[in-house]
Length: 392
Image (tube, rainbow, N blue to C red; front, side, top):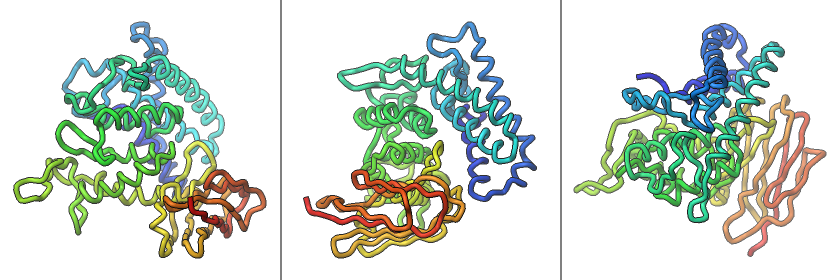
């Protein structure tokens, strides 16, 4: 009863994230030999798949294996292929290459990066070849060995698992094309997979891995549904007051009028709002030196001012404040001295207004996009961005 293939990539990515946020290369070096067994195992499985003459159509170069521990007893699943596993293997190995470069292991990092680039190309090619169009809508399957479109995302146990986890992990790794990510999100939503953006599993809710959907929504700019999920999860998937969160919750209230829990408390559901709040304020693109500022902040959050200090990023802590007054939205931030990259500031205008004039202080090079200021910086410090509002 072991991990899914995707969890090995997630484990590696999480370890690299720790190094990113802390700069603790001593921690990395003490554990590198153990972690190496994981990433070398993924690379070996990838190499085996390239020489697998019995691989199904469109599966050559991809790694077969379990997508979920609950499938452990299904022997036939060991030879199924799920894009969630490959997507997170690509992500985890990409992150390993990055931390190896940081640790001075440039030659090994370059070799892994080269292999991962080829792996990602094979993954994207398979996804492209296995998509289909159903009634004008693009269907992206959970893997190349199961291409029949899922017409109802809660129709049975397997379709519910695809909805709950496999498709979500596919898009959360950030290695698919943005267009493909949107197609997966749209299909799930239009085929009964979501209730108020929360995850449906058969006849109840299951938000255990819903952070995967949340992350994908940030990356494709689906702000409205990201905000809906944040509020709905707090209201319907957590206990009021003390915020315990179950793995699963019933959709309908019981005889007392309360929403009963279908199964017990789990940490991933409990920390969902906290991580979503962090991503709403600041989100780091994983393959670019780019920081998204206020990518999913609702306009009403800043009506009376909003501030946050020491928000962690891989460049160091960031202080952020926003307020709306006299027809303008003003944002101020303090970036770490080590910052070197792009800052994209989204100005959260209310629904009845639009952002017209944008001004930036503290940067030499910047450009205005619709509702966004894109700023290039080679060092940190104070940055101020303001936007003038006009009614529609």
